[in-house]
Length: 155
Image (cartoon, rainbow, N blue to C red):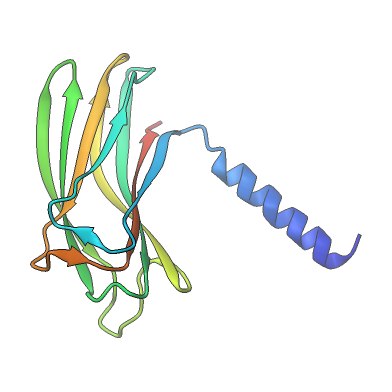
């Protein structure tokens, strides 16, 4: 086997091992229309049947291309826990570009970001409904390609 093949095999193995972390219980993206994210478009996530009483850390994930025209992004995250019906609304201010014009996310022409949301104590059988929409002055935002939610069980 050549060194190049060995390196590729090692990279794939490392990626697979890091992707299989036991603490992540939910990780899902929803794609945004190529025409842009309209202000009234809400991205929804439904996380059903939590399987253990625990504290969970939520993170908002995003993928953004070079076409995004601003340094920051303000998001509104509304969530409801069922069956209790506890509802919360949070404003998330996302810093995407630093003062020098460099993306703060990871990537080259497409950047990936993770922003912490909340720490939630959930019980077995609980479900979670989340809605995300932007709160920018511009009605349609180009360059945001997908938005996701990741939930990890705290140890």
